[in-house]
Length: 303
Image (cartoon, rainbow, N blue to C red; front, side, top):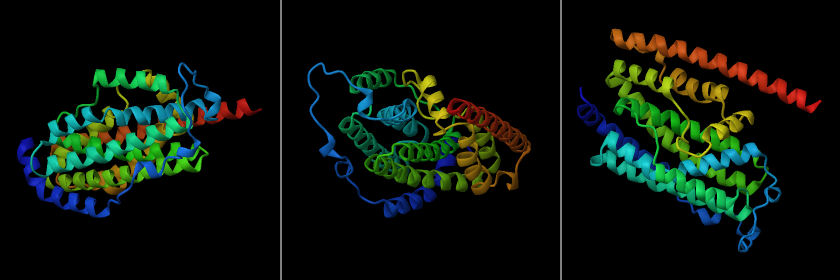
């Protein structure tokens, strides 16, 4: 099957999952989560003071990346529509997803502005640079697209929750938890789409899984100084190789999609599965090494 036929076969599943998503979604309003009483005017040419927020550099990096990723939404939407199409249930889902994701950028930005957690000038300049660049991942086909968004939504949910835990602010925690709850619903849609696609064409999906695990990057492509921010996020344990393996790859590939037990693979699918399992083991080892070094450095710094 080509991509058009592949997506056509999966339309009934998408319709069912979209209906389930709408039923499970709860209406919420960004303005009700933002602690407006903590805000004050920004005076002309007033310099931002990092001490006002009391946040670590690592947590600020995570908030910076989280928000700018949401700001890049038009380009992610364009990619999704390009991969899955703009008509039928696929277009309906993409537009629903876009509307919900846009709400995330609204509530996170309002919270950060009111609490002065980030330099608003630096943030706006970074937003302009990122959106003028329009850089996002481009899965090569529909199968890879399904796998990528499933992994990406779960990774984003994990990152949002872990960031919220480190804010030490009930209002900030509530904001990040609310956003993470939405990301979880998005993840469930894509997770179950992959499950259905796996039953339809297991070899195609194993090839796609191996490709996406090999090439996966957290959303943030195009963000200024993204590599430095990603390292800071990893240092704080918000998202690193160990988290990626334990909280994203294992729950999806091993527990949910059960890649080691998939039957009916052709030769290409079997080879992809072998490479996938090997790659996951390497990621696990790399994650353990990084976490061990980080713990040793923290222990040394505290003595």
